[in-house]
Length: 143
Image (cartoon, rainbow, N blue to C red; front, side, top):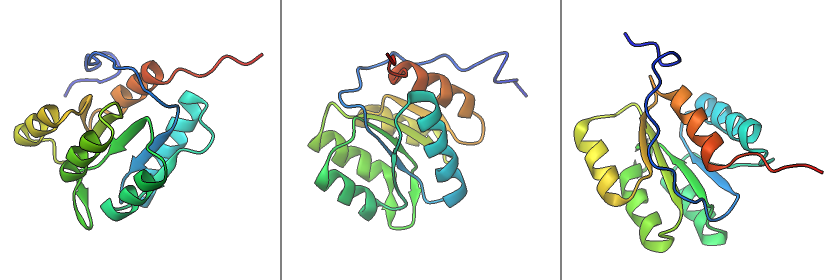
């Protein structure tokens, strides 16, 4: 087993995040709370939004498109990969990071073709997510 801290996964090319807002789409309440706290702590964004389903994520997009989405695939009302395609069709500049336990080669390929900035395995790549968030949305300088 590789130690992800001493041998971290290389980061993908980092796109520009168009808006300093984040949506976490994750149906596990515990993981969602962790991700929201991680985003807030690393980026300085006080209130990252959370949706536990495709329907909830669509409601967020209907009111205001976030600049960055952390997206699970296995959601109670469908596949996050379908939502990825919708997000990129509606807001092509929105940066999407897929974070899933279903990290098959097929899902990774689909996400890449659909426009995901990264696909990370929930079980093994959370340190990579933290590094990626820090690069995508560095904390704002305070006066």
